[in-house]
Image (cartoon, rainbow, N blue to C red; front, side, top):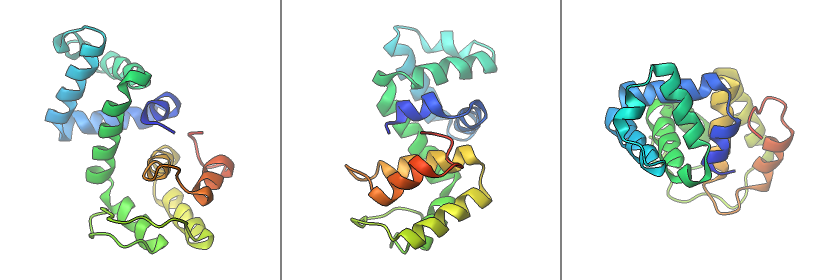
Length: 165
């Protein structure tokens, strides 16, 4: 699943949380994203930034759900996950037994995932985080290899807690 599709399928609260956090914590990245999204529609960034916040977020979400915006959305999701939800990444990787740098950065991903460990890791995610946040992370993790993992694909397709399909 590509980032633009995640933005199409994610619930409004999760998207609002992502954009609000980016706007307040990663202003330069947020502004660059607004500039790039505006350029795709030949709009000046000021046109977007002058909108009331709710309208601004709605416009940005709509734009991020557009296929040509995939790289911008992918970057925003990666920054949001790596900086805001680093503890989630670390916990998930530790539970799976995947070596990392302590900050959630992995040099080499396994070819397969242990089903028992994956089940435990997914359960931990949904216990600690909202279904929207956990679902975004699981979808983004699945994108980390070209074909993803069959074990995780099964979870994404069949676990009723996953909100993004």
